[in-house]
Image (cartoon, rainbow, N blue to C red; front, side):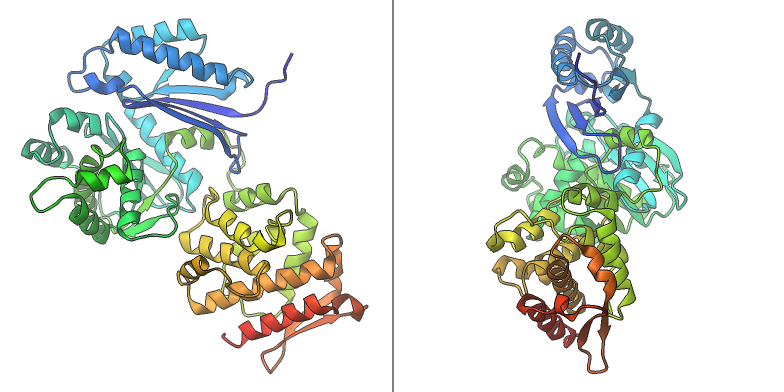
Length: 483
């Protein structure tokens, strides 16, 4: 008999689509090992609040059978299935639920508006570092609003019936009827003055993609993308709504064919929210209710998710004691780093990230592995800094034209810091031979009065000699001149 593994499967039965996500484990460092979405439009009846058709129920059953068969090696308690707005509204929801559960042998939970909103907010807590502000999950049937305070406490505010299926059933995004409906939905809604808004849902992610395209962003990662709310709204409306009052369909299809019709509605909803809640910053996220389920099951919530993820990536190349020895030496030095200590620690863990790659490609592999990794609890600038540190770990200068665009995203001082730290990690590599990082405990690093780095070995000078080490020190001293 096969041993049941510890992965977690979440099946989200939404109004528009059904999605299965399988996480490799219940942890902040969990990687998604499978992710599939199928569009069923269960919420096509959402305005009338009538019945989920038998045809739709059979389609759903067939899809769920396949999804559950993919999860057959998981523990039964690690399969979570929930249904949202379409099921909440349907008059035959309990009959359909019973029909599915009887044929599948699993439990399906119809979550309330409040439960859905809280799960989405927990998804934001899972993926963002110290989020404070308004969370909005824009789906097919509804728009859930919650608030996260500085103590990470979640307060459910309201669920508005302004999902994209509802709005599309009312009319085109440019119709006055739709405009008035959205405006009236926000009427008398008290949201206070929220500086931050965390945008949850595929429609908002499509908006982020559209804005990145407008701004010619090099790095099209959504998770740590943040924008000024008013500027964002102005730029995206100008591009999407052309002067004639029509929608720029060509541009929208380039961004996302599946969400081209939805994006204009999401802009209108977002515009009303920004106005009512006085939103200044928008934070886009890849996470939502599914990650909220995972967050609920994590026991140690005081761990740093970013560092846990870094350790998970580096587990085959570094160990705790090695990193401890590197950090100890860096801490004892008087090098003027202007980099977040979390990022320095992450760089130490990832120092050998390209060890198995051909020397000619190590610098690019390291940079791109960081740029495109699904890190949580990290800001965009920190991502650039960490990737550049690892680039300089394998290169004494910028040798690739495309890297120049990333180097311009941070200050010249921080760029010099990236080069210094990257070259230091390279020097440490040659001193330790990757076999004995305890050698670093016998070394001292000092910046002298001439602003030059000195490397001193307390026992054996021979261990800090050699062309590779000397070249690294020269590179560091060149960078120190720019500070």
